[in-house]
Amino acid sequence: MLRALLAATFLAPALCCADVGVNIYGFSWHLDRDKARAEQVDNWFNPGLGLRYRVPGETFDYFFDAGVYRDSGRNTAVLAGGAAHWRATQSARLGVALVIFNSKTYNGGSTFIAPLPVAAWEFRSVTLNMVYMPKVPELNGINTLGFWLTYWLR
Image 1 (cartoon, rainbow, N blue to C red):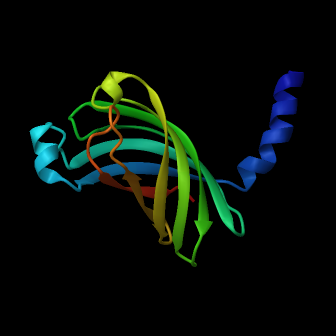
Image 2: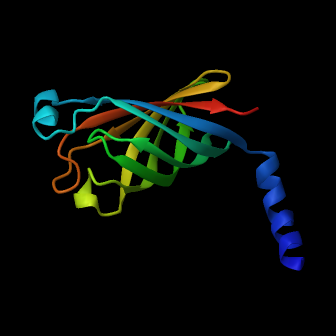
């Protein structure tokens, strides 16, 4: 009981000031489409769902994501990670994420951690997100942009 009370005491301020959203994963654009097709990682429609927990700030927003989606190799990908978004303008966000991935498509099917550049455009109840996944030998053979929406549960 004491542990629950202490946890509630420390977590309550973060929860009252945080936003919760549903990530709706969607699309990828492979910058070398011919190579993606040859390697059978050319699936551009990447449906999936996840959750986002965001702690807004004046200069930076911090967020944590967890989700599952159908990746470019038509396998199930599971991800979790955290990021910081710099508020470049009233709507534009630029940042970096540290993400743990697991999918048969990448890294020979082994779980790995990757730092990835992210960008977003904030609308009132929706955020359009983008991630750049660079070509890294043995991990990901094609430069790819990923796109998804976050619907805010306000």
